[in-house]
Picture 1: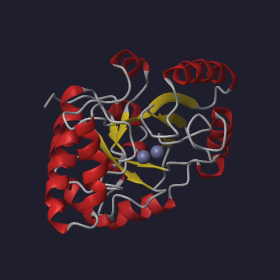
Picture 2 (picture 1 turned 120 degrees about the vertical axis):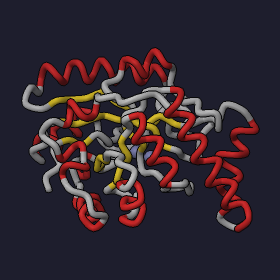
Picture 3 (picture 1 turned 180 degrees about the horizontal axis):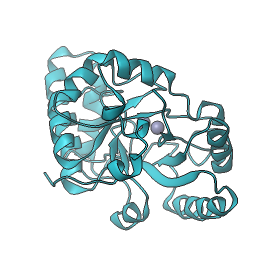
Picture 4 (picture 1 turned 90 degrees about the vertical axis):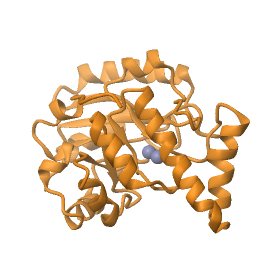
Length: 256
Ligand SMILES: [Zn+2]
Ligand SMILES: [Zn+2]
C-alpha cells in the first residue's frame, strides 16, 4: 500500500519544529503527490496559532505553490471542538477558504463556555479515574463530534478516540452519511485496528495521516498502514492511497 498525500502536518506556527517550506521539501523527498499544512485552531491552550497566523500561512502557501510545482500544497487545519453543541474554533469564513477541514477533539482547549470546558476538559480528565463517568463522557464526546458534522462541512476527523473516548460505531455511522473520513493517525497509532474494523462496517472512508510535528516525520505512514491492513482495509477504503484522492476527499454525500 502506498500513501500519496499527507494531510496532517504541523509547523512552528503551533508546536511543530519546522517551517511550512521544510514540510514541503520533506514531502517532495518522500515522493508524495500532495502535502497538507494542517495547523491547530486557536483554542489549543498555549500552542494555538492566532487568526492572523492563518493569514500568514495562507500567503506563505501561495508563494510556495509558485516555487514547488511538482507537488500539491494544500492549506488545511486541525480545528478544535469548543462546545458540546458542535462549535469549532475557526470562523466559517476562514474554513471556507481552506482546501480541506480536519477536526480533532482535544481536551486542552479554551472552550466557548465554562460549562463546555467542564464537559470537554474536566469530565474527560475525571473519567480516567471515576469509572461511572466513562459512559457519560463517551456519549458527550461523540455527540459533540456529530454536532460538528451537522454544523460544518468536515473532510476528516483526526485520531478518533485518542485523548478522549468516543463511540466509534455512532461516529462512523454519522461520518459515512456525510462523506467525512476518519483518520488513522500513524504518529499516535490511533484509531486501533479494532476500532478500524468497527468503523469500516459502516462504510466510512479513511485517511492515514502522519501528524508530523517535525519535517522528518512528514509522510511517515508505516504504523498507520500496518493498522489499516490489520484492520481489514484495502486501498479502496483509504482516500490517500487512491490515485483519485482529490475527487473522493472533496465529495460530499449528504447533510445529517
Ligand atoms: Zn490532534
Ligand atoms: Zn495534529
